[in-house]
Image (tube, rainbow, N blue to C red; front, side):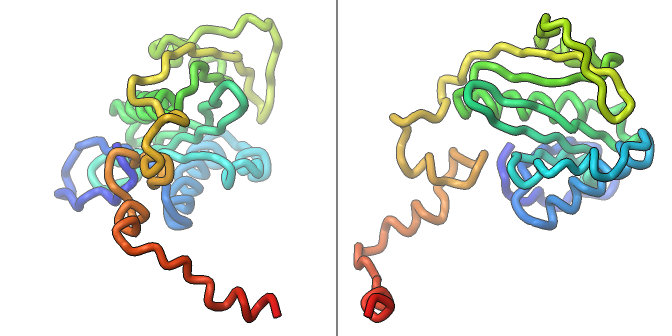
Length: 206
């Protein structure tokens, strides 16, 4: 999984590909998928589904062949990540794309060094999240919003052996999000001589 565009595949391809959203066009795909699932199917009000958190989160997009079929959102807090807004278009729900989206997000969170993933699962989907090792949190708090009842879930994980830390290569840390294993544009810029170009600064300070 990485953040580059998927190669074109044959129209009848059923291959599942997961990648991180990178640009406004990707966020439009996320909006379209979630609108089809939550607004159209579950009658969720617009301002409850699009809650102001989309610009401060990582978004995964799942493709079946060339068709965007599902998405998922991850947000980060002090000592845990929250996986949320998993949505799969109805015609793709017999595929394994939901599992692939969640697994990609778990691997991503491990790479970032977190040890806990928190979620709020619709009660009917608790068993789905249990497949990944998530367990009800045990707060015995009843959560209801957007006309559904939810169970707090917690998945405890170990950071991957390649988790990014302060001891990681500094060029790895500044590479595009989720694409840490390939040299990025700033790696390439390191080959240029240091010139500290501040030509306009002196004029601006006068």
